[in-house]
Image (cartoon, rainbow, N blue to C red):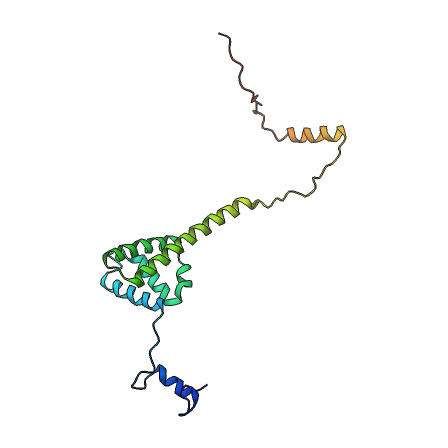
Length: 176
């Protein structure tokens, strides 16, 4: 639909109430992300990321500018954690609402990353990684005494010659 409605139409008249007196359309309020990017960008201009401890915040700023919070979430958890600490330092020097919201989001991202790491560790422990899966019904085979002796002799051939079996029972106390 066209941005300009013909004069006298209902759409044209309702649009008048929202426009400033000079006829221009009102500017949209900048999003929180754009406010955060502007605020962080202004602070990073003051600090040199190569010599001052804002490298991780600079990386987060680039990620936010490139792909928003989805790109920032893809950063390494260590970068997110350090950027949160750097943001808290900048926040203590000069507090602002956009930076406070950014730091809170970074802290939440770090907490989510830690929870995801813990869940992945738990899943890895629960998952059987060696590829062997226990059968639902155990397999039992019946063998004759001759087959058992044959298997025992073949197994004995795999035992090293200098192997001495030890008794794992606790030593008996010596009388005193």
